[in-house]
Length: 235
Image (cartoon, rainbow, N blue to C red):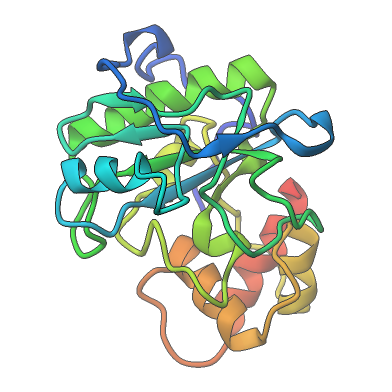
């Protein structure tokens, strides 16, 4: 039986207060621009850095030649660094789409978690992320369905933050969503209704499972379809 979760955008009062996020002195990244069309961010995209150390990731995110950046970088020990002002457009999402929006960079805030991609996310890092998310969501009026994985908006080319990331933990605090099982329907149509792009079904299935059923395998089954149907209620 699925566990009832807080309503979308409702944060558990026991969660760490957003004013207790340990923010370190930021070096700042030169890799940013104005948000196109003057839009406000409606999404938060979570990433892992895929690099051996936080220092190496910071160097890359701040390297003009790399042409990549993020608004925030959270170390393994839980320090958050503001690399790009939230009002500006960081270069973190790349090609992809969500809810039909193709310029995800203009519509989002990017948070990088220092993690090579092959290990669990440490408790200090997750606690800082929770506090940071609460603050960003409050500042910009972003609701829980707007907190997504990089792999959600780019299922054909990205896999972060990966199967070891605890999405259900965030959902229990109203910082993301988690589906309640529903009657199985049209798997692809239900994912499109939630926001996923029009990608090949194997890519959609892989991205969906990374987030909602990380140890699932084989072709789409009734569990996948039931969870996807449950996402319609929070779309």
